[in-house]
Image (cartoon, rainbow, N blue to C red; front, top):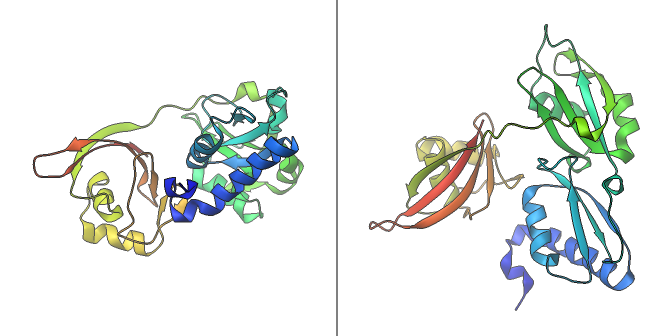
Length: 258
């Protein structure tokens, strides 16, 4: 039985990477620290390595609420401490009375100076406009030198202890619907209460991501646990399928986040 049958074809390169990490730790007794992984990648790691007694795995994104986390893989005789994850937390200071910045502004500022998405973790903004970002320590000096502007705001990045990490609000709202299939266009129409004809252009123009990867096929099949984002409409996730209706439709539970 091939391990690949448990994963989508587009996930195979990452599966191969995880298998390589596992072999390095298990047979060569290396320890491995990865870049930031999204929740789907973390799930893949747990599926492949989670029950291997010869490999210990730990995740950290700076707090127990973190969504994006770094992974440390070690032989079981090595202990992993929080400092082993090499995380740096910055506060993004700016004049909140005169200007506001959003998640996409911070993301764009980092991408515009050539920082890859896997090198920084969660971006946090609370109701008071307090903004933070956690990055891999190895790029922290580069970040300090190159991030002076976010959106329309002039900013200053200050290192703060990980213990000052903002606690995010649980903004997921759970809803229930029925759907004739698990096709991407069908589910998006249900989740965002739009017609399929309005959903299709978003998909075809590359404005839809599934598990943080652009998907431009309307017939892409979603599965339980998938995260979805539609530019301008927020994020959603497939929480569960609670059987079928008498009319052979899926009873779907999903979450929405603005």
